[in-house]
Image (cartoon, rainbow, N blue to C red; front, top):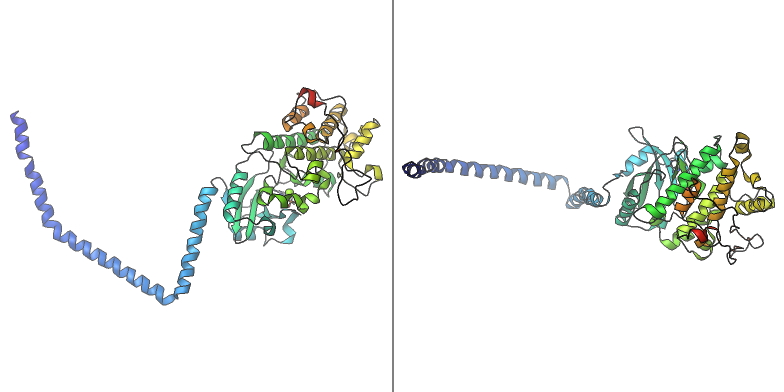
Length: 416
Ligand SMILES: Nc1ncnc2c1ncn2[C@@H]1O[C@H](COP(=O)(O)OP(=O)(O)O)[C@@H](O)[C@H]1O
Ligand SMILES: [Mg+2]
């Protein structure tokens, strides 16, 4: 078409003009480029001269090293910690008033815990891990923190963040206003918990353990279930603390550490004697804890008359005499209890205390029994407890470990 050919013919003209224009400007832009480069070069030379004048080469290397380290750390953090905060050591030092003894909340086998207050007023609990026992590098530490942080449940205490500074390893938890259950059961606290509150606490702990053992993406055996590791929020809802902490320590050391030796009254026989660790060891400790919550006393109390000193043993004696009601905290009895419910909860505890690990029901069954979805056995069976005659021996012995006491649950609901 004529029109088209016209376009084809005239179209090169403007572009040729454009080419001519840009060609005429080329010497100028070349000049600008040259001058710009020269200015940048001069600035760089001046900067290098200034640095050389004020810092000796050694100092300069140190300066570069210092700024490079946080870069490396933050790289590691971005890989390892996507969901939690990384706290600066200085921030935690300031929050806890330089880890002042007035702020010490307690000191367990994994290290001391301090109360802290952040700049925005938020209260935190800072756990300083005992590094001599942990022997863990920064990368491994961060990987473990990330793993623990990924385990979340309403009955587990929340890990807010961590800090790794030189050899120091610190964990930062949310602060639980009502502290730990041991303070209420046998500590200085004046708080009284009625049966409803205690049942809620028992059920919450059971649910937290069920999550750790059965529902979480990694199976976690807590290893240290005891009253001081049950924290209470402002509504007295329980949250299990210190879960996953054993991961920071070599396995054999965790088993032998004072944290466990100190809480022997909670330790399952197969774990205490042979170091055999499965979730069934937690279930045994849970059974001891349930008896403590109901009776409001420590599992071992040598100030009591001889037959009352060891709680599971005493509970069983009372059961045999049909006097189980005597185990119940007198204050709670006075306040009013649903006797049938309390008795059934004690029966559940007896099931958890079975000498053979496989006879203890899994946590999901325990939860079902506690919310009365599953009928509870009528006749509880004898729990395992330390042999009274030989308990002073260096080698521990459990009087029921070799005897068979079949769990009533074995026939209708095989445990895991
Ligand atoms: N997040 C927290 N909020 C409030 N109190 C806490 C918290 N974590 C720990 N504690 C208190 O600090 C005490 C010491 O804790 P820990 O070092 O874990 O020792 P343990 O658990 O062996 O008693 C606990 O018993 C509890 O009273
Ligand atoms: Mg603890």
